[in-house]
Amino acid sequence: MDVTKADEVRGLVDAAVSRYGRLDILINNAGATLFKGIEETTEEDWNRILDTNLKGVFLGCKFTIPAMRQSGGGSIVNIASVAGLLGMPQHFAYCAAKAGVIHLTKSLALDHGRENIRINCICPGGVLTPMLGEVININDPMQVERVAKQHALGRVAEPEEIARVSLFLCSKDASFMTGAAVTVDGGIAAGRMGQVHSR
Image 1 (spheres, rainbow, N blue to C red):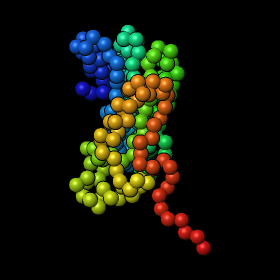
Image 2: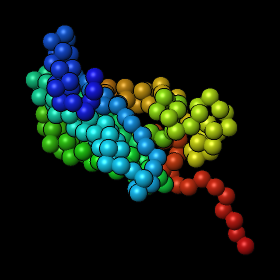
Image 3: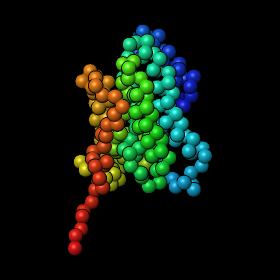
Image 4: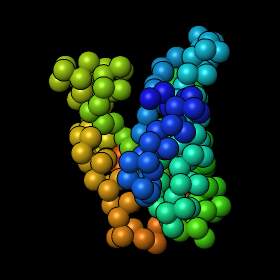
């Protein structure tokens, strides 16, 4: 399914409701990345990053919320990024899109909380996924180590570590959480890693 196409997203929601009789959970997890300066970034680059990372979340929520309302409520988890909280060099389009996901999440949480629809987002750091493989060679330990050093924990995440937080946010254990941007970033947002030198 192409998350940037309204008809395809609507079709997926309709298929889920048809098969299961209701819709309780949505995880908006499609993503695309780009490392370019603004002068090198084309309009097509910009549209691809914003369409996939932000418009895709908009469409997922747009067609899922009515189905959840009919089911009596539900939980939506949008995958944002620590890049939505912090500026990153040569990464402005992705940062802008993910910042949009965070504020879309917060606004929709206000709009739909009284309908028992909880909407939260996760802001991961580096994760060993194919998307990271578009930026570095994830089979090269030295390149992975370079990314790992940006994290306070000194490593990147396994995909399952993000999935477990998604499961928590969808569970009854998170029943009083909505509008939250949960950092699962190995400590990137805590501050800059590196030594402090004094004279």
